[in-house]
Length: 124
Image (cartoon, rainbow, N blue to C red; front, side, top):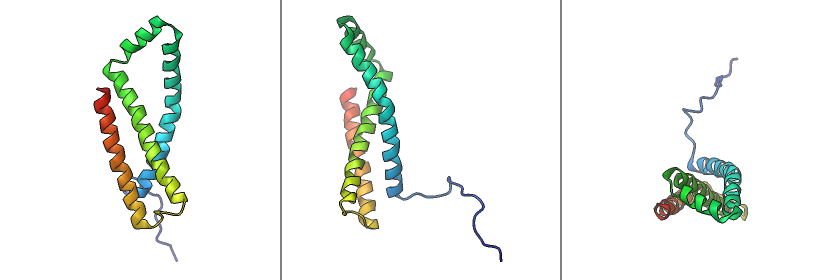
């Protein structure tokens, strides 16, 4: 008897629940922050090198591209922090049911979006 199983999974047709998206984005934001550490350390080194390099860095950070990169780094940090708190609460035994986990994921998305937008307004 032949089993009716899919030969391959088409990931474009699979609909992920909000909890899965929250978990995946938490990991992606962690990877972004890992690489952002190098950029931030380089910027810190430039700012502490001399007064001239500090002034040059200030001039560089006024460009829209630099502001966009900083906004991306701060957004990743905000989301990673909020999702990490959510995961810690779930590790403590709360919000483990499907309905409360789904609600906490949606609340995490909403709060992260509001904070990210406010950081964008502050940077520009």
